Structure formats: C-alpha cells, structure tokens
Image (cartoon, rainbow, N blue to C red; front, side, top):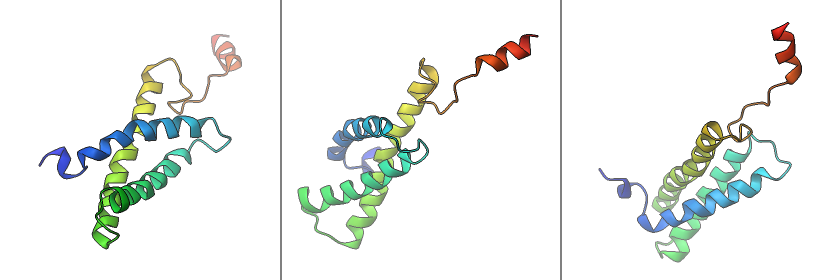
Length: 110
C-alpha cells in the first residue's frame, strides 16, 4: 500500500494551512493541551467539506469516514512536527516542557 491510498495527494496542500492554523491557535489564551484536539476537529470538518464540495464526491457516509481518516492524518503532521521542532530546537515551550525554575537549580547545587 502506498501513502496516497490513505490521503488524496490533492489534500496534502492542507498540511501547511493546518500548521499555520495551529501556530495562530498557540497564540490564543486556549490551554495548550486542547490545541491538538481543536486542530483535529477542524481538520476533519474541513477535509469532509473539501471532499464534498470541492472534489464533488457528494455528502455520504463513505465521504464522512474518508474525511475523518484523512483529516486525522493531515492534522497529525503539524502537531507532531511542531512538537519535534520544539523538542530539538531552542523553544522548549512548543515541546510541552515547563521552563526550569532557577531557584530549584540553586538549591540542588548547595
């Protein structure tokens, strides 16, 4: 099986769009653990709408299941990519790490 059996190649253009949406959602006062869930829901709905109206498949049960599966794969890339960038980059906030407290470092040295 190839990757395009699961995701339509035309929908891959949505990955940068979802990354930008995720980036702007991070700047809102929404809790960080909710952001991937919001992006996942947005991705599934938007993918179903794209399959229904843009590609002309019509609204059916098969389109809904396909949109849920493809939306899940498409939303996984920006969220996991952001985590990897935050983990190996200098921005530990993106990786989900709490900033270290300098007072605890000083106490450990004494």
